[in-house]
View 1 (cartoon, rainbow, N blue to C red):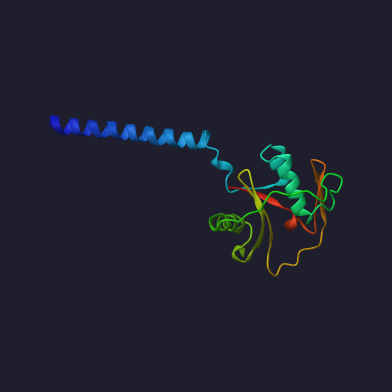
View 2 (cartoon, one colour; view 1 turned 90 degrees about the vertical axis):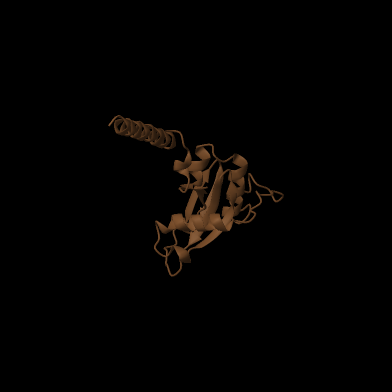
Length: 161
């Protein structure tokens, strides 16, 4: 009977040790991990005010939002060169579409316009097919730069990758 009770005691100790390891890993991810922000969409203003994008990034986003230096001719001149857009990877495109699917049932039909990646954020706008959105002009000012859009979905948003 001694070997059996020793075996049971060893099993209990192993279960306790494994349980502690699992608890420590969970505590680490909940308390110390920054992945909680990933997969979220934010306004340009939120991200800029948090310091996650620079003023140069903000100028590029204003340039793309307004199709050039329009609405910001006092800050941007004709020689201004915005941040290069580059390609949006297939993985990030589907990751973004999946996130938007939580808001819209027809996510697979969403047309996403990509404006570059800025310090771990994808800049994008979207349109939904067969949706008649009211034409409500959105005009906001961030860091003395104007951002104008014909409706809220045309205003650039930032997705944390």
